[in-house]
Amino acid sequence: MDRIKFFQDTIIDILKDNAAYYKGTTNPLNLLVISDKENNHFQLLMQGWRDKDYTFQCLIHLDIINEKIWIQWNNTACEIEIELLKKGVAADEIVLGLKSPEFRTYTDFAVA
Image 1 (cartoon, rainbow, N blue to C red):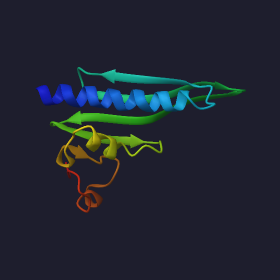
Image 2: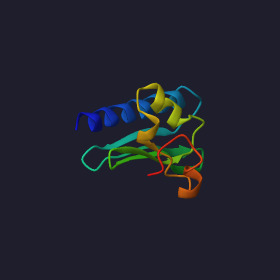
Image 3: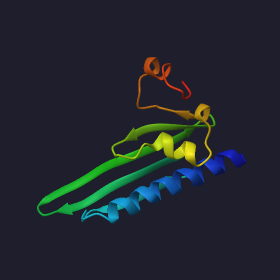
Image 4: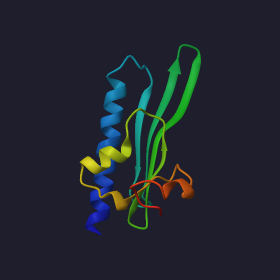
């Protein structure tokens, strides 16, 4: 169970780092770090008004499923899998969920 807490804390740190990066740009939108630790769902959302246009967008979505971190969505320049590796998550604990199961077999990461 300690590994799950480590995963949760690591994911939240990465999401906060990404939110801080976008807040440091000229981006007028809100960056929301959403963490559902009970169900192991984590997101970085961008929301707000830019002139007359409203934006609501999921930038990053990660889940913890079967003791692995699943990268479900990444609409940023950040290579989430590399950030996870740098923070001590093993490659076989990361699933590229946004890639097809067939593609995953050609990566250095977990298939599922």
